[in-house]
Every structure is written in structure tokens, then in C-alpha cells.
Image (tube, rainbow, N blue to C red; front, top):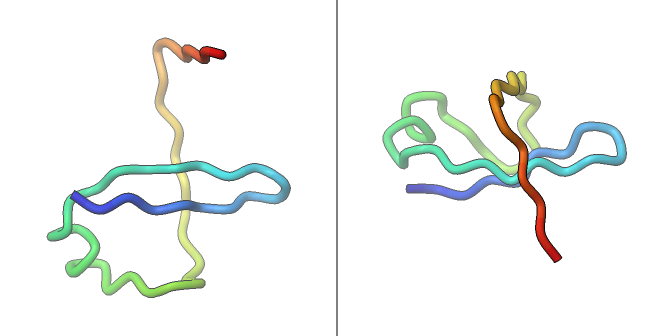
Length: 46
């Protein structure tokens, strides 16, 4: 697994994808990507 941080405006999304997906997409630091969010539940804690 690979952990990536994607910045969207002032927000940061931390995502986990497979290493295979990283290689397949040829992702590199500072690449532009499209983010799709699908969530049935969002939980936060403090």
C-alpha cells in the first residue's frame, strides 16, 4: 500500500492506494490528479 497526500485548495486528503495503482498511473510528486470522494460515513476523533 501507498499513502498519498492530495491538496485541494486549503484541504488535504490522505489516501491509501496500492503500489500497483501508483505504478500503473505513473504517479509522481506534484502530479495533478482527480479526486472522487465516496463516503457513507465520516468519523473524526479528538
